Length: 95
Image (cartoon, rainbow, N blue to C red; front, side):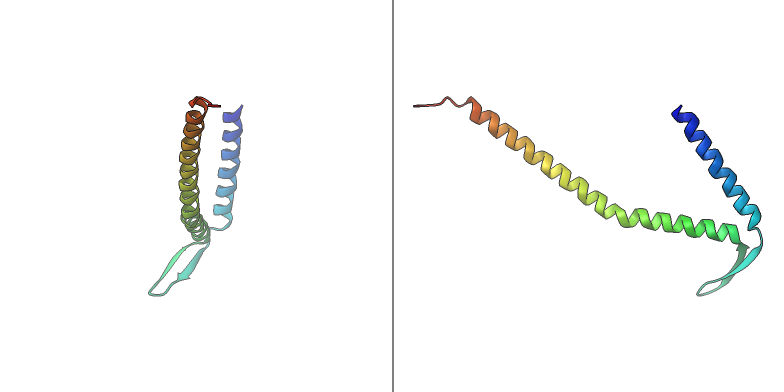
């Protein structure tokens, strides 16, 4: 069921992408600092969205890695605390 749902979503995205490309096939001139190029509007929009997605992933990467480091540090601290608690429970009580 999960695979069928994923297939249907992928198919819908592909159909929308193809219709977007067909509707925006006219060439436009892209001027950037040192030169200019002519490309289809749909290609420019798709490349801009992909570049934004890649920049978003890289900008959140530092936060994700910091969180993973914090989780590892806290797991190590819990392990040490559990070991200390086990050792304290094994010490006989003296009156």
